[in-house]
Image (cartoon, rainbow, N blue to C red; front, top):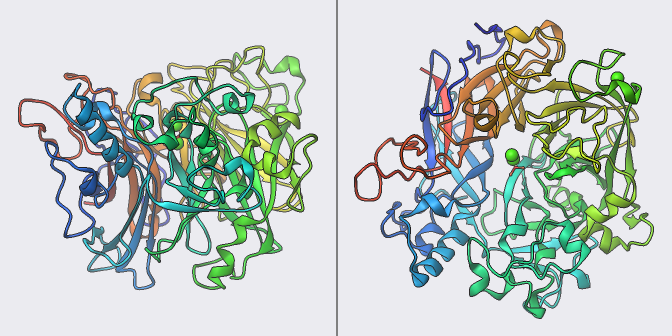
Amino acid sequence: AFAAQPGRTGLAFDPIAPVNRLVDDFTVPAGYRWQPIIRWGDPLFSAVPALDFEHQSAEAQAGQFGYNSDYLDIIADPSGKTAVLVNNHEYVNPNIMFPATTDAAERRRRGDIYKAAQGMSVVELRRRKVGEPWSYVVDGRRNRRVTVETVFELTGPAAGSDLVKTAADPEGRWVKGTLGNCAGGTTPWGTVLSGEENFNGYFAWAADTAAQKRYGSTATTSTENGWEAYDPRFDAHDPSFVNEPNRFGYIVEIDPEDPTSTPVKHTAMGRFKHEGANVIIAEDGRVVAYMGDDERNDYLYKFVSKNRFTGNGKGRGKGRRRDDMRLLSEGDLYVARFTGDSPAGEITGAGGLPGDGAFDGVGQWIPLTSNGVSVVPGMSTEEVLVYTRLAADRVGATKMDRPEDVEPSPVTGKVYVALTNNSNRGGASAPVDEANPISGNRYGHVIELTETSGQAGTSFGWSILLLCGDPSTTAPTYFAGFPKELVSPISCPDNVAFDSEGNLWISTDGAPGTIGYNDGLFKVPLDGEQRGNVQQFLAVPREAETCGPVIHDREGLVFVAVQHPGENGAVGDQHSYFPDYVPRHGGGDAAAPRPSVVQVFRA
Ligand code: FEO
Ligand code: CA
Ligand code: CA
Ligand code: CA
């Protein structure tokens, strides 16, 4: 039995029991129902066909909703009856999208489908009454697909530098496409940020420089998607395109209100495997963005804008939007150093709290630039912004357990850092420390960070909020002091969000392989007696990851993106029929699940 917490707004629920990893259902609490808003392959325009697994084309896919949904927001218009949905499509699962093939021509044809299935979607929604679930609008005015062929403008100090020039873009300012769009954030001026995360896997790299290796290059001549065979920009062996990988790994900003606008990539926010970025307005009006580099033993970053937000920080359209859309192009980049306050001998990595009763301490934001100029010895500003990992290596940043989503609470300004796991923690290159105290960290943890010299300042305090796991079978676990026997088991925190009361919501990626349950969405109160009471709200089908949670608690609505259902593709126990639960590919029991955005509402 799990402890229920009465909600003060519209989202009271009794936590669900954890769901076995073989279950292919989407599971919600008693009294709630679910339905997809939009699925992979649903047409955004009336001239575009519905998904046909046997006859899919790149042209159709470029007008259909993309694959593997991750970051999600649903931004309602003032009427409450229309909205715009923005969603990242992180990558594709070729092994389960279409029937197997060994034909070379078909493989190339599919490569173009994969290009069109990634990127982002912007889709209008509508409903008859405020508070009801949403439907998507075919031919909505704002409907748009962003793909691997969409042109982006580079902004900031590294735009136009030699490090980002190619034969196709001698100016170094115009990049075709976005890759690995994982988590993100919606800005106070109504644009959406998207993190380019695992871009390295799309390139056949030369892999001969330390910088390339630091970004995950491997000396391959072929990639899974196969684009390098016919599109030279994905072949970094080609001297004309050696810099192409330097044009990915940024924070992207898109204006969902204007489907004709050119989206941008912000070099001022650094280049790494950006999980996402979340923005808050500092006391003096400057904009602060928090960002994770999702790699084992990589870093936590913060960007502070040079200029001030023109609005009041409480809503969209209240300032000079065009000015606000340039805020992330100019400013300074910082990386985090965590210092524990317990004797090193007490951080055993084997469990139990240190002598002072908490994994906690203080920290510093170490500048990589100041007044927009590099302060890293031996590196130019352009090098700091394009090879940001190398810059952070030089200044003594703290190696973290894979920083995923990082988001400030809109209620308290405290920052929550999801550290999903780290099999390499505890080795010689990354011994346990008080901020990453678990050797081989399998289940992940969440850090609560409190700025102590203002939101834009350089000092902070921190403590571990959660050490994840199943308290009945794994040790150690910690839930901010809340009784362990009362919480829902949780593993591998990934995305975070807040409801209107300031409760933290966490979605997970990796629970099936660690605690044996399907991934899900969890509510965690942050204050009062309920602080640390992890309560599971939903579970996604087998082999899926839960992404992009959006909590409209006042309306009793919760939205998630269901990413990579049935990803292993094995027939039998492991495949998924989500969300329609009908066989595909011409009968039999062959499955082709469709990643989707789902809404949960009261029955
Ligand atoms: Fe794409 Fe770090 O998750
Ligand atoms: Ca301590
Ligand atoms: Ca993620
Ligand atoms: Ca993840």
